[in-house]
Amino acid sequence: MIISKKVIPRRTMLRGLGAALALPLLDSMVPALASASEMAIGRTRRLGIVYVPNGMRMDHWTPATTGSDFELPSILQPLQPFHSQLNILTGLRGVDGEGPHARASTRFLTGVASKRDDGSNLQASISMDQIAGRLLGRETQLATLELAIDGRDFAGSCDEGFSCAYTNTISWANETTPLPMENNPRAVFERLFGDSGSTDPQVRKARLAKDASLLDSVTERAHELSRQLGAGDQVKLNQYLDAVRDIERRIQLTEAQSDRELPVIEQPAGIPDTFSEHATLMFDLMALAFETDMTRVVTFMMGREITGRTYAEIGIADAHHPISHHQRDPVKLEKLLKINRYHMTFFAKFLERLRSTADGDGSLLDHSMIVYGAGMADSNSHWSSGLPVLLAGGTAIPGGRHTEYPENTPLSNLHLSLLDKMAVPIESLGDSTGRLPI
Image 1: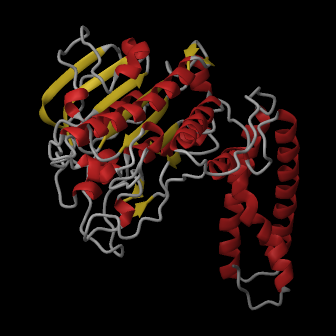
Image 2: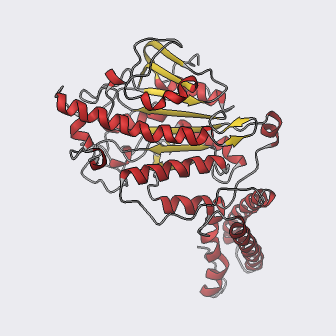
Image 3: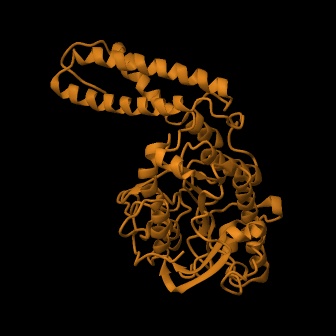
């Protein structure tokens, strides 16, 4: 709120600035054009991160042989059609620390372990997806998109002595700011396309024209108000106008490709009743965000650490987390395997959608690098070494390989290499020690 000693009716202020509260809806109305440099090379780089919780049945994840002549184990079998575009990466580790589940999700993209905390003094580090988004987001409506299946209402179901913020996200804006992961498909749709309710071109054009007109009105009113404000309030108003100018830039981006053809999709009603419907819808939205070039960086948590989710659809009535502490019980081991493989079926469908969607001189899968993995290996022991990680897609990285790196190679080394491929080079990340040869 702008406060001035000059007399300005409160209702006038609300009319002038209230509209600005709705302006973030303009962040994601229609697709943005690729930059000139990307058009020159005929492709756009995209980064996707898919995280699964509570470890993995590693004996059914790790291929028996390295190199290109390897067979996909049980969990990875749904990915057989993509064998030539897969890189299975063995030997990577996450940084150690207290709080096995808190550190698992926190370190996955930051290379920094969680800190024992009651929620008042969070500490981690900026995650690699946000580093990529800061540069790539200059050309898109959204810098990054953070998705999830589970909500954030898990008080009391987190590592003891650690804030639930650590297990609720894998994305961090900076050392102290965890980013919320959105699990409501309706909210995700609105963030991507506004509240018009559809991706229909005529509906989007009408909404764009309406918001452009509103923005002109807000700008004009702000300039009128500036003549009535003191020096301190002028500074605040200038900051506001800077934000308006950024929105004007984004509207110009959207107008430049308002005729771009999109799949006609209606706004989801909300969170589906079943995991299958929910996961499918979230992956579809992730693919749509890439296809429309709304963003080039998306993270997706298929489950939060310590999740108590059950999977009645595949005959598992027990909660995931207790099952993951199997203590070598054959019955629990079989259930964990079933959950791990079930998750992979949705990922396979997502890859198929990317592969079947044309993009420049190839497909969306060709021009994307998708990481799938977990923040711990053997869930029974909370093991931090030998993490289950794979990389799919990306013609810039030769596929069809199982690579075994030296034991305890930092996972952050992979992130440095991926950022290099995205033309976002940085010197270090978390506990990194160098680049991976990928």
